[in-house]
Length: 187
Image (cartoon, rainbow, N blue to C red; front, side):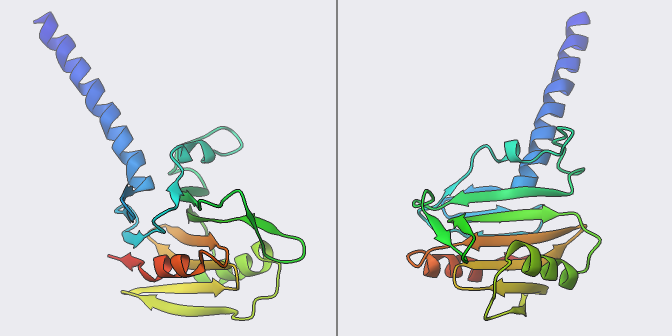
């Protein structure tokens, strides 16, 4: 009897650990070859085939107090990819060099989609953008797009988060990145 009780306690412990891992994994989605799928936020997209997903992404997701519970974070990165040439920086403007890559962030915000897109436009880019900000519809999702010669943002709402798809690319990878963003599907 004592062994059965210990076994049940052990089994419950293992199941709870597996359950916790699956919960975290659902935030980060999964990569299958070049297809990235995130069921928690309801989307999928193809990624550039020679780019590499960051394996230890959870190490980048913590607040000032060391909290790593993604539910509690105001902003977390759910996918980060580096281009093969990620040691080369792309010159965005006179002051800014950015490493080539792709990131998807889930942001808790009380701002509207327009306000959040305007904040990115003004604070993160700090440069003149010829194409400005425009709307696009993917499936039934309204997406704000910000695009210039070396950067692209797709910004949309999902449940209680704003999703920010972002890439900085070089002339060599521009077509791959734009194809990747065009493959985005929401379900």
